[in-house]
Length: 399
Image (cartoon, rainbow, N blue to C red; front, side, top):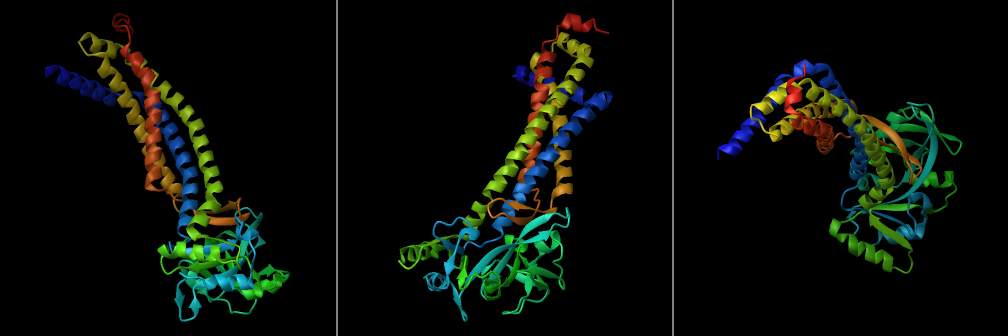
């Protein structure tokens, strides 16, 4: 058993020696560490956008929330439902009810033009006409400043995300809708969901403003339980009076954001790979320099009976250690700089803005650190092999 223990002891000894001599190569080591830190910070920062969008969509709907569109429609903008349609939908089995009737809100969805605060550029902002049941159907709706609009009046309430990102949405201000000024009377929250990007108004007021007659675009409803969805869907699709598309609200939001999330993740991965290649070259340079500067020490160890394996592992260990430090620094910087940072971007499916908060989750921090370790492994592998193959005699003669 002496052999394996001796081999492990050699690995520990050589690795400890490498770590102790790091201050002698502080400049090149810092270059590698900071390069890897930059790669990880950028990668985690970009991917936190997609994570934030996904979390916003997840917070937008409870498991028992459903959405009904016209058959064949993929978005609310493409949908259209008559007054009779929404009445038949609200009578479907499985919908939760309270003292005021079915928890179903017939809604309109239109787009108005406002300015972004950050860039002073035009932005498409969702304006949603709702009914009295909307506050009970949409997750976490609550007024946090001002009051709810008066039903039947040209008044609006604004989601906190929209008020934060777009101009002219403070309580007491007014916005132009259908060539008229509509006062902003309140701000609302919705548990961080997509509704916080929207402006709400009485649907009965919005219909004549946009000449919609007695029509809507969607029905949002709350079921008695998530398990009631199949019976609810079967009842609607089997009704010959209707041509509708029932779906879980969570599935709808996931589908609407899939293109945006895929684009951001693809961009983040591409940027990370390109920067990672540069960081690998930086690590290669650092570790080749380290091996060259310790050629005599490595040859002396080999001459004293140290095996090639421990030398390879010790160089890899040093490279991985530098990568780990760089990865942790980069992940920490990304968390400090991006976590909770709010922004708005265009949802390519609905062609309207969606506000969200960047989310640097633990899984992203782990992913960034693992990516850093991969860079360190690749950057240290070839220098480690070179160290093990150094000719002992010629290396001992180097000055």
